[in-house]
Image (cartoon, rainbow, N blue to C red):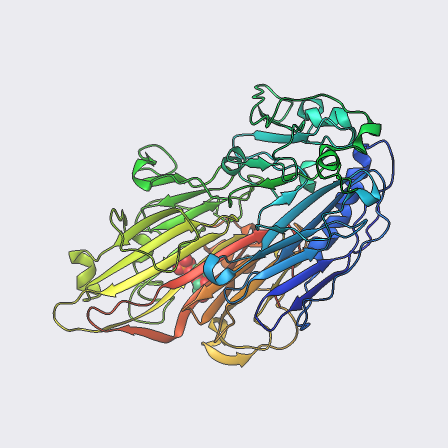
Length: 597
Ligand SMILES: O=P(O)(O)OC[C@H]1O[C@H](O)[C@H](O)[C@@H](O)[C@@H]1O
């Protein structure tokens, strides 16, 4: 299979928008629409994913042309790019004669998106000159697609979904399936059919969104067109057990126009302008919204092992991604991707019992990081019982996610004896539309006696990695750090990215807001974004320390890495009734190796 790279160009305009132009991506030109075509195409797209975006070309005008479309293959682009909070992105490939259009634009400033975003476009292109859109580009919403087809995958429950948009025209039907025979979609009968292995699937759309999908046949909306949309859901992975043929037949299906009739599409008949448009399906769907499960309604985990008497909330925020949040420590212990793979490390020897903090997940270090103060290591927030905050004050900045849990911690009488300051610590744990996990801390000094307090802080995130020696951290190179293994002395990092061959325990200072962990073996990148937390701690205990820890397996150091968004060097002081601007950290994981820049 070809591993040719697909060039990607990025232009950032003066208005702060960015354009990404993908050049030609072609499947093979096989006429029979076999799944092999698709796989080839898909493989090429994977290379798009791993192509770093380039910077700073001051133009939006340049449009690359795509010539010589294959006559009967599925053409697909996948664009993956960073979204910064300050600028939006336009992704464009223009449709002119023989070319396809895909534009995607949004303003991140209003949309508040963070993290890498993915965009898929599927264009069915039975004939080169057929894809003509009046010479105009179509502006699509971020998640829109031209053409077809979404959603496949196995979530924790083993559900897979399949969508097919079947125009009834030969070569225009399409099914996407996962797994064996049973997964085939009705579109498969009409030509292009896509089947690929689970490991190939790096972009999936949550089920909940899929079900909300609206299909709008742009050109044919008022026509007596034969567009049929079918959605099949099946459970399990070895073929469908339950099939729910569903959804919007937009108009009665007139089955199978012949190929000859493609030339005379309803569109052509209607407009009579010589334009042929065998299939332009405009599929608009609402932005992906994780499922909201009220924390209060979530099932408490009590009693039995492994939590003993620790109360937890099993919070499912998303069809494919779930979090387990323990009230003990306000601690997230699970964050899964859409493949159901766990992304956080939790030790097999973790003790879910006070007074020990849970070894893994995301402990909250407050009001002290590590031994930087007189309190116990990492403060006490990680081993106190938090409560669900029934009435959190509104969040001005976090409108992007509707799936979240709010927790609150207030000091007990006992806490006040060891740290005599009144505070309210509100923690919002949210899942963004793209599956990113967002933690936001709001800490208020509630002293009635006019006492300020000072604290240090970290989101002590344990990332799950394939093999620590295959991992690289980007974004910290050349920075100053305090080395915990050398009496917190200050050094400057040398060299490129950070790799691991022995114990590491460093506090990088004044770090950028974005840090990436690249896992070469898993071909996966974690992206950490942070705000209000200038430092970043990197920790791996390596073999000797691992052996010395009772709640950590001897070899587990190979499969974890802590990269912790933190405020350590310059402690934060809060005056009475002062609210700390949110301490924010989001993590995102993508099934590709990306560069941090
Ligand atoms: O064992 P813990 O108290 O959970 O601390 C685990 C580690 O946390 C941080 O990363 C510190 O920098 C390390 O010095 C410490 O060993």
